[in-house]
Amino acid sequence: MKRKKLTALLLTAAMTASVLVGCGGGDAGESTETTGSPETEGGGSDETAGTSEGGKEIIDFTMFIAMPGPEINDGNEIQEIIAEKTGVRVKETWLTGQTAAEAVGTIIAGGEYPDFIDGGDGQMALYDAGALVPWDDYLEKHPKLKEMYSDEEWDRFRQDDGKIYWANIFQNTYGEDKSTTHNDEAFWIQNKVLAWDNYPEIKTLDQYFDLLERYAEANPTMEDGTEVIPYTALCEDWRYFCIENAGQFLAGYPNDGSVIVNTDTMKIEDYNTSETTYRYFKKLNEEYNKGIVDKEFATQTYDEYIAKLSTGRVLGMCDQWWDFYATVNDVFKQQGLDLKGCNYVPLGLTIDEGMENMWHTYGDTQNLANGVAVTTSCKDPDAAFQFLEDCLDQEIHDLRFWGVEGVDYMVDDEGLYYRTEEQRMQWANKEYQASHRCVYSYMPQYLGTSRDGKNSMNPDQQTSEFFSALAQPLVDCFEAYGVSTYVEMIGSVNKETGPWFPMYSFSSNMTTETPGGVAWTKMGEVKHEWLPKVVMSNSFDSTWSEYMTAYEGCKPEDFLSEMQTELDRRVSLAQ
Image (cartoon, rainbow, N blue to C red):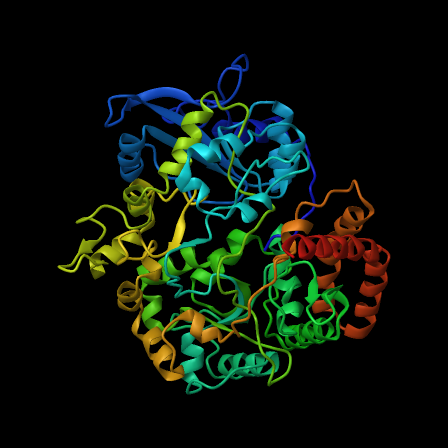
């Protein structure tokens, strides 16, 4: 997950205008170059553009999400259906060309907010600026929204003033857990590489790179003659977790993100200085000097990384599934690369053989650091919170994730949803997605079982649809390993995480107002600078020593002390 510092930086006037476009108050049909009148008081709701099924005018809300994401077309077909049924249309604007903190800082400086916002690492800055509407009174009015968490879980979202201002509500399970995909971090490998070596058991980091080396030596190019890239990594901005945090997983710990929680001692430990992390980076350094690690890994942008993965040239990488799959898998399907074995499967690697891995977290993960919020610029917060609840209505939920019945999916005689191959291809088409699909991906949503008790909330978790959508090389891979899902493929031990989990939900919102927050910020800066150097060094041990000296200068003990205090607090609250 994301581990970043909170800052609020002003950008150039041009960048300010581009951010405020979707964050300020034009109606959904306006040109994206329109920023609205500076005299307009408050934010974005604008009652225009059509009427709902109940005869009321449709309200156009705005939303800014501090993550890159896909724009959809004005007049998007499913968005219009949802607007007619709920009376609300939401114009989403996504992060482009800046950090979350920079974008949020610009919005705060302008003083005019979108109706909805997920500020990512800028969430606390929004709270500190008094930009958010408390949820407390509205939760009592909207039972579907409230049922997403227990009272105890909702209380965890409370801020210093005792109120709730946001909720991260898109990883919750309704009914039975239907998980088929591993949405989290892993070392990924193309299934054709495993097939080439007759599906070997790959348990350790050394075995993983040994296979990549041997495959690349025997298959140095793609069918079109382009050179394969055995392994790449991403270091850009907050996504440097792709290179930074594998040490905790390789040691057999789950994704607490910024620290290890030793459950035997209930003490916070620093994975950055562990023997496992040292061995991990030493291995990356060896592979880089052999030419196995992508020479461009340290400087490539996220867009360049995704474009590279989408070619099918990259054999393996360490990343979160959600960070790449939606774009890359759709491209593979459209170009037929899935039929050539280019899809990635997760491996639950450890540093030594015989260790349990905890790459996969079973059950829901409650991230307290950020989530969807309603801002004080919203002229109709009652309608805004009603829409948050309407997103959970089963009919609306089906439209968001399954689409339109008879167009995007079919229903059999037993009431089970399924897609034809033509519908799957259409659903993966980027032009069709822009004109037809409307997921509202940062609005409330469920995984698990639909309220009809038959279907899955998400097509990826519909058992029949999951298997029908798999390319044959993936089917062969799963059969060879005796598994039926990505979750089974990674083979993580099913241990219950403690009430503190995940600790990154605390560290992500640290600020430089405390010694621990200062240390956290400096640690991130040092790791951004030194970890690529460590991997690319011609003298690993000497460079590692220099890195450790710089790291120790950040006073990580201040950070670890505050994390220990928070761990103790969370444990005591659960007792």
